[in-house]
Length: 118
Image (cartoon, rainbow, N blue to C red; front, side):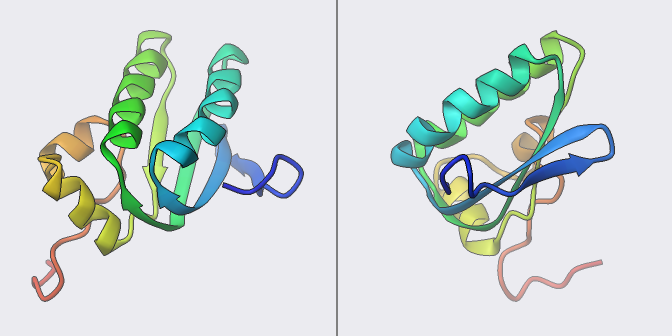
């Protein structure tokens, strides 16, 4: 994740848009967690754009699930957009399939490479 001054933010609808790049592992989580918690405390919806990120570690996936539940408990939403096929494959390796991804805020969970899309 880029530094606070470089992190592209803005709004998508009524949600604050946050962009992450690089590997989504425990290091990214350490940088990202305070930002997302601040958005939660500010009573805002959030959209996390991960289109420039790759790979997903277990700690990051667990945090996103917990954050999604926290947002939902307060009547707000946390959406994750732009998940690349390699990041989706990392989630699937962790046992986090497309049905689970949909329940925890992922807008689209890409099919495996070579799988025909409807």
